[in-house]
Length: 386
Ligand SMILES: Cc1cc2nc3c(=O)[nH]c(=O)nc-3n(C[C@H](O)[C@H](O)[C@H](O)COP(=O)(O)OP(=O)(O)OC[C@H]3O[C@@H](n4cnc5c(N)ncnc54)[C@H](O)[C@@H]3O)c2cc1C
Image 1 (cartoon, rainbow, N blue to C red):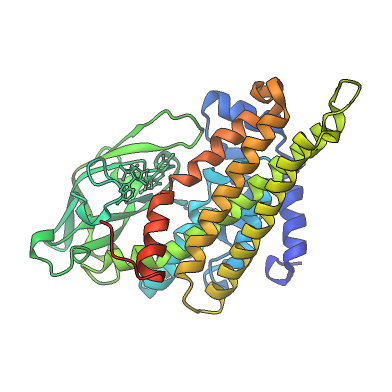
Image 2: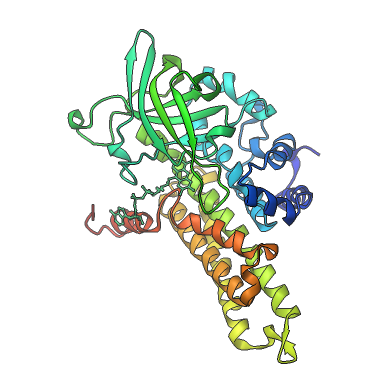
């Protein structure tokens, strides 16, 4: 049966089966060595899961976002770290809506076949942080190409990706009516660029995320690699963000479900004072609370995905889905660590790894404060705070 013909339950089962071939020892090893899980990414790619959002005419499965969310949730629920490859789905929000037909024909079939990876998204810069409009990387048009100069930070998977979507300034901020105008998105062929204007330096972090900083020095990119119209890049990136928020939310739900299952099993098995620790309400209640938070957040993820797939506005729902799910996974992670007592700190239980990994989603790709700012300003019509 093709991926397209499967219902969500079948998709979940198939992804769970694939993930089961990558046991916890595998993830412990990649985490310990800060090694990219190439084998896992290859298996997902070969099974077609990473190209599920690519339309059928370009060789993908053409599934709705709800299916992509289910795939990522299952990956995280298995205990894996899907951060190694999730960007191939996030980037589709921008690519499918704004790349030209020629760009889609050039790249999407190869991405679908696994011949090219589009896993890098270069937006954040050291001095700009959350304030994307103040990025300093510039792209200047010259003789049919753009010459790019600047620096990005936290460009994850840059060493493991063939292509990168890069945001750069093509017109000075001071000359724009709106500070978010004058930004443009480019498709960068990273393999061609390495050593010819592009330098990648890995950043070691508390999680295995293959994140890097990149330095761009007179990098030449063909003009045909500009996505959409020059100067409209901020909107293109924003357009992709609802999909990204929903998919992150789904990953957090997967994490939360992993923590809940792990804590419940341990609370039933571990005996102290001659009875299972799960018999104590002091242990049960935090598990029940985390379960409630997870179920509620999952409903918001589902609702946001349904609106997105129906082509309806879903900014508030996508942001709320991401935030509620990230809070639920963190609550579940904290509960799981507490339930395990001292053993929660031992590497072999995997709790400490997942605890570290799920914490990221309160900061990236957008920090919790900025989601709250969005809701305050755009939904509740309170004054803009920044
Ligand atoms: C492991 C990892 C992977 C990442 N991967 C990528 C990637 O692949 N591509 C990419 O482009 N970026 C990536 N990022 C960057 C990530 O999106 C940013 O870290 C995030 O957007 C926050 O920006 P910042 O770190 O500069 O924080 P800052 O903007 O410096 O903010 C610091 C703190 O101040 C708060 N703050 C700032 N302004 C306000 C305000 N107006 N009101 C209230 N609070 C405020 C923030 O909420 C935050 O808590 C990654 C980050 C990490 C850690």
